[in-house]
Image (tube, rainbow, N blue to C red):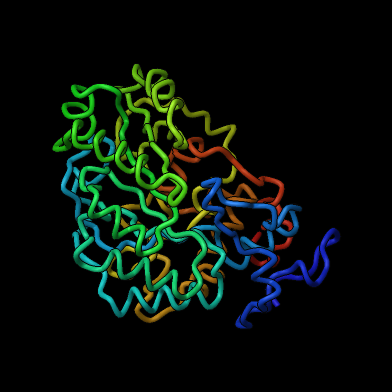
Amino acid sequence: MIVSPGATATPEDTLPPLGELPTQEYLERYALTYNATETNFLRSQEPKTPEEIYQRLRYFPNQVLLETSSFCQLQCTMCARQFNPRKWGRMDDTLAKKIIDDVMEKAPWVRMWFCYFGEPLVSKKIGLYDRIKYAKSKGLKRAAINTNGNLLDDQCLDKLLDAGLDEVYIGIDATTKETYEQKVRIGGNFDVLMRNIHRAIERATGKLQISVQFAVLDVNQHELEEFKEYWSKFPVQVYVRPKMTWINYLNDEIHTDFSKRHACSWIFDSINVNEDGRVPYCINDWEGKHVHGDLHTESIVDVWQNKVYPYLVAHAAGQWHKLPEFCQKCPDWQTKRPRHLDSIQLFAKNAEPDLLR
């Protein structure tokens, strides 16, 4: 087994052995369920103790980001696309099904995002709805997308609901048309966006969890409080994302004290797949500076447990010199609230001795 029962856990609480399918009892204990009447995910059955959380993360992360396509119709100022860090494309159906099957076989409790670098609704005619529906038919509990919302019209919303989408995050990042169209979401239409969001609230409340997002930048931070006040009046979740550089791509000022560095929550939280099947270092590695593996020939679970794992240990142990140089210099570890640091520390405590030398 890759894990063993901890002091506060029982064998029934631990993860299944490597290569063994989770039992139905295990899935019912740990899988998340959606309560449509409260538009919220019930987390009462998730692992709670540091040992249980560690065991879950050692087996597989909480989230998978599956890049249906990397195309986008906007030129947002907070996005590294403006630097053309890699070629754009679409994930083929065979690869998408392989990844979905692998995840659903081994870890159906995850939240799966049907997007990563691109705008998912651009790909609505090339696989988005079908892939969500396919994953839900395989037992996926949480299907999500993050969208700029400009293409989220009534027809699109109906197809997403029919496919079984559970969550949608809509990036707005402004309260005024000027800031939105001229300083943040270049090429977007603020009026169309607001109409689409309010129509979605009107038609999908109770069926879909809707979150509105504000990514803080130098050019829009003066509108943050007004944004929170406005959207607090509606049945949506308000998500504020702190300033990020995406591994030093953007120049927004972030005050960094590396003497206070802790393990980066980003790399522990998710595994991400580019449309070409490559698994980048972390969610911020849009360019693919370091590739853990290729899912055309590898299993996503094996990549996490064997390729990503040594870097998780290095983060947990504070052995920054073992990380890729770009990771050593990246300030974005401070932009995601650290969670479960006591569980993360167990990666160092339980690591094989040769990984800590």
